[in-house]
Length: 374
Image (cartoon, rainbow, N blue to C red):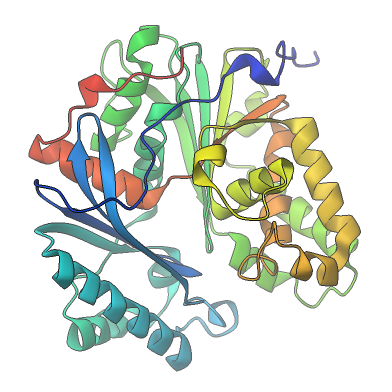
C-alpha cells in the first residue's frame, strides 16, 4: 500500500528558537563544547539563559582530519598538524573567556584511525586540551537532544538524521505515548540513554551509525569522473548500508504525524540554496521546513551546475562545494526511502547537544521550560 501523504509542507511551522549568536559578556557561568569531526573543528562558548543558552563566542574551521583515512587507516601528519593549529586557537578562546566547564569530543575519524591514541597525546602535549573520543551511540544521543526544541507537538514518529563528515547517525523515535506538550522534553531525556524507555516517555525504535559521511562517501567514489553517475552510485551505496536499520523494512504509512529533522552542513546548505541566500543567515535556516519537492529542485540545480558551477556558487561556499553532492546523495536517499513531503532543518548538532547536556546536569538550564512546535 502506498504511503499516505501529509497535507502539505507547512504542517510543521517554522519554530522560533533562541538565536545562537555572539553576545557581549554578561554575568553567569560559561560552558564550552567542541566537536572535532572528520572534516571540521567547531566550538561554541555559551551561558545558560532560561531553557536555552546564549552564545558568547564560536569557532569553526575545516581541518580535513580524515583526509586519506579511507586508504591508510591512519590520520596523516599534515591533517593532525592542521587540527592541532585549530585547537590552539580554541584554547586561546577558552582562556580569554575563562571558561569553567567544557566538554571537547572527537568522533568518527578518531574512532576509526589506528593512531588516534597517539593523536590525543599530541593534542594534550601541544594544547593542554582534554579531548576525548565518544562512541557512536553518544554522538547520536547528543544530536537528538540538540534537536528537541524543533520537535512538533503533533509528531508521533520522529526520524533524526545527522549527516557528518565520517558517519551518518539515524535515530527513529516513537512519541505516540507521550503527551503532545511533553514531546520536546521527552526528547531531551533521551540524553540519559536509548535503552531505558520510561512509561509515557519517548521510545527509541532503532538507531544506526552508518560509517559514511560527506567526506568518506566522496572519497569512496572520487575516481568516478561522470558527475551524475557518481551521484547515483553514492546514493545507491548509502541505501545499501541501511538494510540493518529496522525502520528501513517497516515502511510505515507516512502521514502528518511523521517528522524528519535533518542536522548537518549539507541540510543547512540545501536550505540556504533554496532560500537563495548569498550570505548565510542562521535565523532564516534553523527551524525552516522544506518540502521534498524543494529539496529535489535544489539537488537537480546542483547537478546541472556541475563541479565548476558548484565551486563558483556563493550559496554553497568554497568550503562546502567539494562535499555537497555526497551529502545531497545521502539526503535524497533518506527522503526517498521514507516518503514524506517535508524536512525540518536544524542548524544545530553535536555542540549544542553537549551544551544542553552539561547545563541540564548542572541544574542551570531547565528542560521543563522547553516546548515543541505547536
